[in-house]
Image (cartoon, rainbow, N blue to C red; front, side):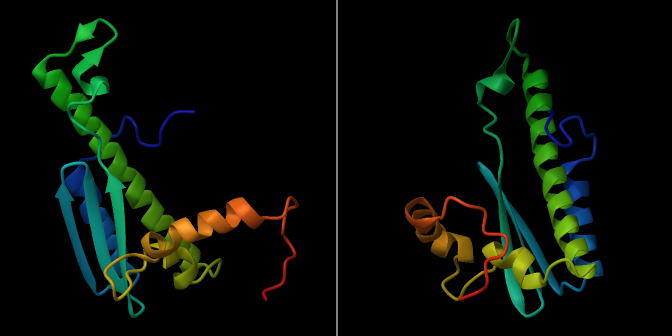
Length: 154
């Protein structure tokens, strides 16, 4: 199976704009983004929550961009391959955000359910950053071997 949007020609800027428009359409009141080497972030405020997504960006010096099957790439080919990989990440994020908001709008899930892991806590960390290791440990050490489809809340 190929990676979603691996051949997209939609620019990263256009994807960020689409994400911002989508969030605004669904009621977000604030929006920000930033990039740094190796990562990009979007943050927004909606439903009295602040939410942050961090997406890993590829390393432009990675071999997948500097070389191809016949050897070293030219500088322009390196740049084009890297830009394509970056565009793919932004398209995937646009899809994720849109799908989560549509799930909420359709009554499939609540805002909290869809954005829980990415909700920013007073510490500045997300719920996932704060609890991810603890949850992983609980799953590794205590998950039942059967599917818990009918489990009632405790």
